[in-house]
Length: 319
Image 1 (cartoon, rainbow, N blue to C red):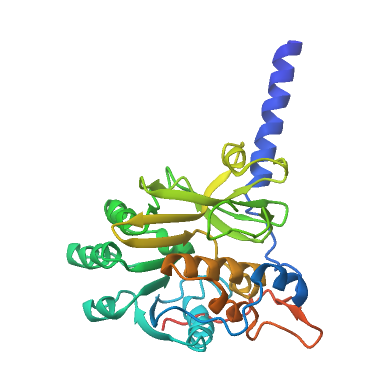
Image 2: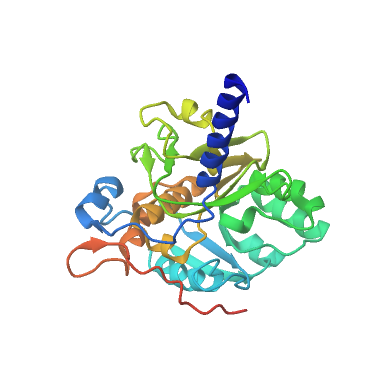
């Protein structure tokens, strides 16, 4: 083998190894270490006594749990967050299984969806689209961007901005703490937050994306440079875009994320903070009234916030 050919072969092999290493399939599920409460409060700010400007009616959409325990725990996450949200003054919460009724859409200000959506009829998509376009807010978490049959992916993207294009085009993978999550801190939803964070979770990318989508969070491999602009981070090699996005349609606002695979992720204070900031942005409200959710039931007696439990011994439930 000639020298140049050998060098090319070696470089190609190394590239393949790097891609395989970045696939995340060998990632060990492990939550971030708990954080001191004072460190978290640097980003939540002073929220005591903060009030919403109006009454807010939230509809939590969930479905049957479809993975092994500790992953896609749609029912368990609903049971975790609904009581926390109900404690916020001026907030009421309803629940819907698999898809809301027209009456529920009519009454809701915000739809939070965490499920694998079933196939929907044209009339159901019309209900969803009308809800958003009239000014309804949506927070879409993890697999909620996946719609089957794939012929319906465009309809879902019309409603929430991004959707899965199928296994041949869209990608998925777990990612470990060796990855950086870059945040667009110029966006109001993430203003004042760290430029990078780390989680151990799963995401999707190469999604079908509508024109009014703004990507505000992306996942990059460990080799990605730390001190770059968010625009430069999005253009980096092997970057996983659409980790977080915002979308507008009509008068409605959507905050979406493809993260949220593991149950322990929802106990991470910084992840809760991202979700609550997204809730506030989607509702066009200040985030302070939602900040108690970051800490509620999430602190130990040493003042640490978060969990060390991987929660993989949970048992799934159909409903």
